[in-house]
Image (tube, rainbow, N blue to C red; front, side, top):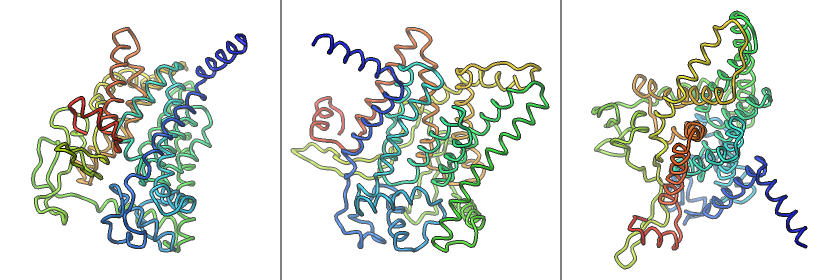
Length: 462
């Protein structure tokens, strides 16, 4: 009997050292947490009364755009054509399976967000080969309130990011064609995925080029790799648009649809009368507010001074015996790791730039996984965060704080690697993970009575 118990314990121990098993456990855990709150908030009105008037419909943030659009799509009307169709098709599938209710609307967003945690764990393990570092990356990612909230509701972003992480993992693991097909699906969910896709294409082209000797061969190999990768992604993307356009008779060709998407988004510009230290500006010409709308510019997203105010996506407040608390409170808010973006950039830049200079060396040189990780993180941050600087400051296009959600995986990947070198660094890493998880606990969107009681006993707002 004791021998049998010992063998069971040994098998469990071996399983917990297997990254795929741990990734599955992470997925199940996060999925269970997300499913437990998926019905909050719920609508007070039937779907037929929530197509044009949204009060009492239970929509969180941009669900007010997408759920009515999905209902019209299910009736055969082509709408919301400024965005690609795949994320909306997943919402339609959810409604077809579970009904026109919060579970149906949000299921595939919740599923995608949960899978993303497991994918980030596997991506971190792919680079660092340490279970504890991969787990730290996953927990840092889980603790990001913005990412958690956006992947809890029916929006385009969670499926887009899930496919983006899966495609990245496949490409970096050598399954390049399949990886780029998946990246095409990411772009078919949301066009801003193109920044993440460009990051993967550049990194992959660099790695393919470095297998050659001589600058001319490297340039040729890199360009060929980038061209083929781009062709696969665009073929998947345009094929998806073509299927949608044919089914709904929306556009004569996918190229006409793409032209419409580009023209629509290029027209979304702001006009600011006040600009405060490049941090934010006031857009006066708004039908929603006479005082104007505050536009939080990209620099403000990542500095701890004069941080942007949490955006109330959906908040309910209750008062009991003079104590007010918010049982449902979806906020668009940063997490502490956003402020470490610049630290990560400084840490990864020297290694990334040195590796890029190797392109000009005469001989082939092997590149370690840690160097590839630094290059991956550096390019990812540049193309997924810094790209919004010219978009916002030069082109005056609308930007939103939740766009940073696509940069968070890079920070979560880099911090454990950056801090694992010595005992002090390990202690700091434990502190960072703990702060991230505590931050999520404080800003968790749906709070139980026990949750509220804990925050209240600590003198914290609930």
